[in-house]
Image 1 (tube, rainbow, N blue to C red):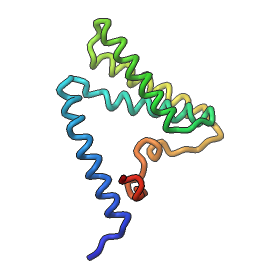
Image 2: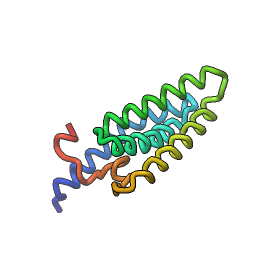
Image 3: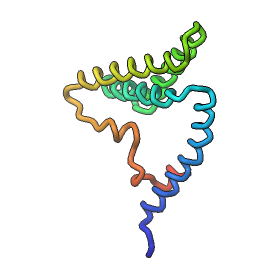
Length: 129
């Protein structure tokens, strides 16, 4: 039985993400930064909302929001606060700000799950490269 092209591309994309994320996940756990991914994802929600509010490209806005989150976490950790504490507080702050910003976008309907996670079945040949 032959699989469709989109299913093969989706499988290859999933395998590629798994191969890239596994070593990074081990590093994050070893450094006791397990909430870092959650904090970054919550900052991404804020980045998407701000990009839509100001009609900016989404990817650069998400990258800026994630970098601001990482910088804030790095600055606060050096002041004697535990990494998990800082990550937890910053993650929930970014989530709250992002959800409030999305709620204030009354005329824009969006699927946050699509923006944050994408659609693995829509992976193209260029995306695999």
